[in-house]
Image (cartoon, rainbow, N blue to C red):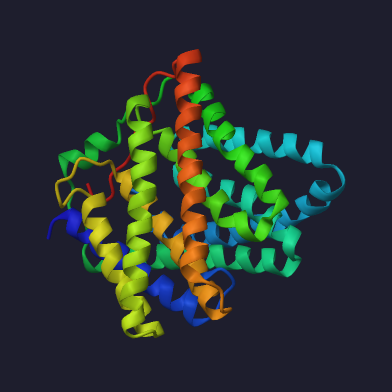
Length: 341
């Protein structure tokens, strides 16, 4: 079996188990836990199981510690803004140095947990626990699949280890912060509505670091629209037989479809970050739609508003890249690993 096939199986099984656990236990914002599992499953080299569990527990503790930012945001907003901007900058630099997964998870802790804490402290703690659980699920499934289907050493895998570092990493990190920070500030005005938008913006900011400037606009907007299409397809499919079992099966099926294109088993012109961002967009549109349906809200109207917001965010990210590239080109983008290569 090809390494790409193994990677697809790991991702599909991991997503199915994450959906079963997060939705089956009725955790708060379960789609965020599924996103965390996806991030772990899609990294090029799976974590050792002990390290993954430790990372998950440490991240959980770090995120819970993010609740301490809430009083600072409430009483001293300017110092809180500057401190958050500094942390984002340092974490973006960390991601550009080859620790993209760890940086992504910590950025999530810095941005989402304080905003959730503004709504309710118990919600922030619940989200932190769920995200840590998502990382642990992704790690355990990865290692289990590796035991069943050990990967074969290839020249492509060896070549991936010597990927070139990006030019001007400080400019790329600054650009990413400028993409995230305005949406994060907007989320302070309405935390319940903008939490998924912050997650979307974080993914976009990291995606721009792996793209050439000419690719950014097309990929950011098209990946957002692709994610919206996948979310609509998933919703239509689930209406045939609304149940946890069908949710798990449909999520696994669509994640397999996306993963085959992400690892290039199906030839396409888009980058792996395009497909990863499309699936994350699908999850952050579909997850709140389930909650809207349970509370009796108009699902299609709320989803249309969210999708419009994400398209605006993508256009804003594109504009930031264009303006900053004209001011001072950032050179070669960061290398992007391909799972299962």
